[in-house]
Amino acid sequence: MKHPWYASGDLFLPKPVRNFLETYLIGNDTSLFYISLWSFMHSLSGVLFSFVSNSLGDYIVVHTIWEIWQIYIRMTPIHTLRGAIDIFTDTIMGILGFLVSQQLV
Image (cartoon, rainbow, N blue to C red; front, side):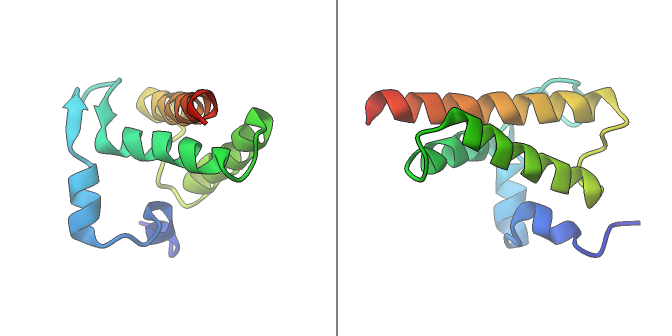
């Protein structure tokens, strides 16, 4: 059963947008590791956050709170290896976006 706030994990994006972002570039639904268009959304979040704060630590705190929220609403299955890898990949992609932005600005 989905948590009542499950849709907040996708920022209440319309279904066609969510479906588009779930396009896999590497891997698929059954792969432990994958890169999808969502991965680039995490990079974009790092870029945008770099305009709010110059602190990588601040970004990591905010990103971690978001990942905890996704676990709480049962969007990320933390009890699976795929869920843990997803959190790790999301975090790395966001940090990369933040760092690249810091170097370009």
